[in-house]
Length: 132
Image 1 (cartoon, one colour):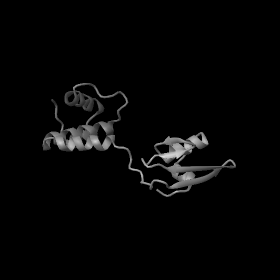
Image 2: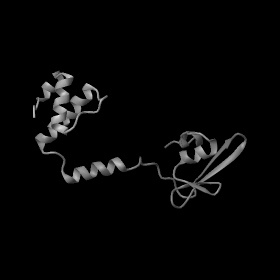
Image 3: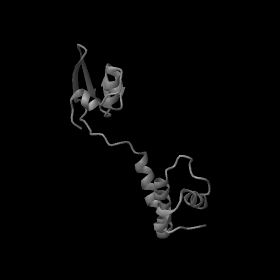
């Protein structure tokens, strides 16, 4: 393995970086990977090798955080959102399970509910005039 130092990575040619990538990753880099991104990824790999990589606990926490949905504000069950749209008054209520109910249909987010009403993607908070 060639093992350029961290300073050498930034100054290395694209061909040298591609060779180093093959040595570190075990396969060629993606065709359209930019040189700056290749430098960042290789630098990160070097640093992980130096400090011993992630612990199993940290790796597990990172993967868990990546899978988690964005936390949405919790509205109290029974809360109601009312909006007039195209001359029709729409009432959405928060169910006991935290889902949004409109016309006896249940939605996981206010944005999904707003989409069902309007027919296009729109922020539920914006549509109903609510602050998150």
